[in-house]
Image 1: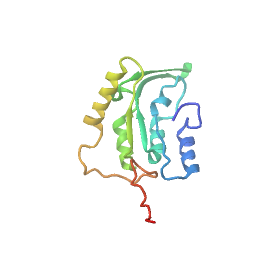
Image 2: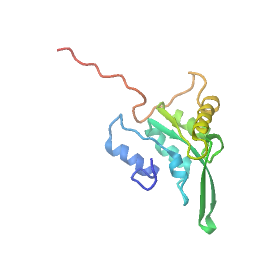
Image 3: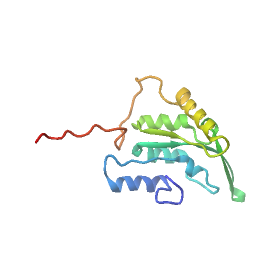
Image 4: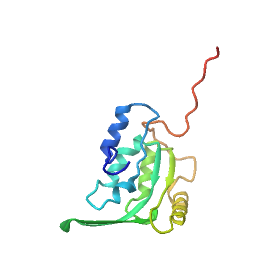
Length: 155
């Protein structure tokens, strides 16, 4: 997802996947691209609930955000995942409930991106992702991860 494109809202992104209607076509809900805007934005929770059932890849990054709606002033700055606007604990809890098992790519724009990205990975492993295989996984609306190849009939 990327701002000011066809994939710039939760609704338009889901509509694209539904229009294509192939099981291996899913979304990459890069929420950070949407919350970093210096203008009013769609609530990140709404985007999560709309897009994660259709997602099979996920760029994760976070921003802090300050809004003064009365003055029409909006400011966003890069932040580590654990301290930004998006609660990734909440987002991943929902993602697992709708069957997300795709690739996760941590990102960060600002400061020492390599160190923050490593800290983001550690945060996911220690505080967000399930620690055991016994978690309840929901059913995704798109194919997840590597799919087994179809059997090829012998000639």
